Structures are given as structure tokens and as C-alpha cells.
Image 1 (cartoon, one colour):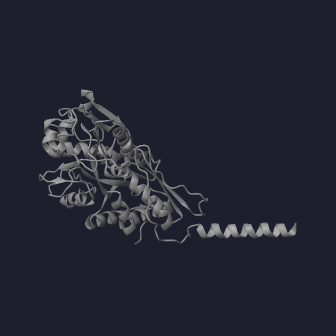
Image 2 (cartoon, one colour; image 1 turned 90 degrees about the horizontal axis):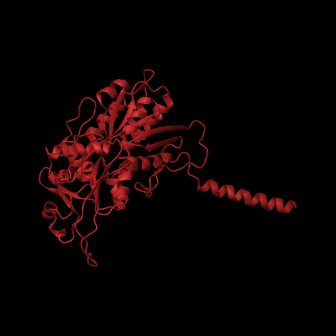
Image 3 (spheres, rainbow, N blue to C red; image 1 turned 45 degrees about the horizontal axis):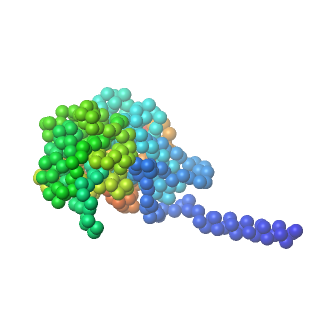
Length: 397
């Protein structure tokens, strides 16, 4: 019996040693290789679950808001566990409107928003500040049921749209895929474009992605009269060919499941779901694709246009290589009213890492975002240095 007990204790000791060897070190600073993170449609991303109880002194930081940056915020939250294991970042994609409401109500520690704060929201929040984090492209994904079978080995070119045609689609003036204006832009697709009605998908919730998209439509043509805002009355709804989807995920899922549809989502949702998206003829008359480079070009076109609140609209940029439906995604923080110094310090250190760490930048680029140009990043870091708790600066370096 004593021999059996000795054997059992020996096996248990070996198991403990093996498990200890597999667990990540609490002092590890090397970020692991990025993993594939589901981001849209039926596969909403979630922050990796923590199996072990949090160590003493750990801090959970809660944020919510825009779905536009949800894929990269999910990636960053996962990676940051290896940078500072005492911090758990929990970000929920509920839309920019929900994020702004949460930071005003005091139910979250930070908000994500692609939609700019209104004057009355600044007044209600008293000490709120917006910080640009990344630029993202809004793209038009589509699900076209081609009019004829595609020969084996043939790859069709991407759909091309210009600024006026995109406005006409959302104004319900271009209603079929083989409309002469679409055919003229896509001679390589002419025989494949179906004589089928276009189902136009848009966001059903208040959305910064919608604000970027409708600001672009407003700049593209005076024919767009619905305005640029986080929520608008869509002409396609009145015409009967509009469909709403909640979040970037909902729009992506609706397009995937609706033949002959088109919708707008953030680029990473198109990439993650392997959805085709249209190229655009930009303001300079050049056909461009959405990418980190075309986003960087749009940011540089507006590099000196930031207002005193550190916000700027970057749609319809004039550069040859600029993507025309671009926008910053922002974090919103209280700059004086946070009361937990340790939590505030951990939050700002996480934001600082997100803006400056090469692995964080790579993760963002892999998902189709563009990191801030150096001059813009320096403005953001300087603003972060102004955050105080009980009058004491939070960041000291």
C-alpha cells in the first residue's frame, strides 16, 4: 500500500512539473505570434479566457464601443496578457453610440468610437478627451451571383465603383447589377454582371462606421442629401431594397447570406471572412484598393488638419494613392475624473504599448489597419501625459 502511495505521489509531482513548464511566465515580455481571431458574421471575436484565477493586485479594465476596431482590440487584449499578466482588458463591440453612452454613464473605463463626440457630449462628460488610435478603411463588400458560370482557372477582377455610382446605389438610383454605369466601370465583368436587383445592406444601429461612410457619400456628391451621421434615413429603405444589420458583424453576415447584395464594413471584417470588396476610383481619378498604404496616404493628406480636440475627418482625400472612405478610430477617456490611480495607470500603459510596440503595429497591419504616422502618434502620447487622478499625473515617462 505504501508502495502504491509513493507511486501515486510521484505521478502527481511529474504532472505538476509538466503543467508548470507549459504555463506562461508571469514575467514574460515576448508577445507570441498572432493567432487567427474570428471577427465577423457568425464568428464574433472574444478576448481569450483566463483559466487561472487572477494574481493578487490584478486589474480588470472594461471598455466598450465601436465594432470598427474590434478585431485589433481583441488581438491586442490577448497579446497584452503576455506583456503585463496583471491586466485583463475586456472590450465589447456594442457600437460607437453605446460606447459614448457608457463613458458618459460611468459604466466603463474607456470607450471606443469612430463617431466624434458632439458638443453636448463634451459638456455632459466635462473632462472627456478623444485619442486617435488607428485608421481603418470602410469597404463595400458584395455577394454577386454571376450571370454565367466562371470558367475553371479564371479569376474575375474585383468590382470597381466610383464615387458617384456608390452614391447612386445608396440613393436607390442604380438598382441592378448590370446597370450601364456599373458595366462601364467594369468591362472585364460585363458578361458576368446579372440582370438582378441590388440589395443594399447598411447598419441598423448608431455607428461610427456609418458616420465615416455617410460623410464620404456627402463629400462624393451633392446628390447625397441624407447627411453624414452615425444614423441616417436611408433612401434604399424607402425604395424597398435596403436591409439593416447590427454591427459590422451583422452587415457582413447579411451580405454573406443575401445573394446580389452590397454592404459596407471595416476592412478587417472583409479580410477575416474572405469577402470580396470593391476597389474605388478616388477623388484624384485613380483606381485604388483599401490597404494600409492607401490608408496611410489618406492620413498624410490630412496630417495638419487636427482640431484642438485632436479629431479630424479624413474621407475623400485628394492624394493619388488615398483610399476615399477612411477614418480614425478613437478611444475616449476621462482626463481628470478617474479615481483609481492604479487602474488609470494600467490603462494608459496599455494604450501607450498599443501605440508604440512593433508587435502591436504588426498585428494591426495584418488585419488591414494603418498605424498612426509619427507626428500624429506624438500628439496622442502628449495628450495622454495630461491625464491626472486627484491632480497627480498618471504617466511619468
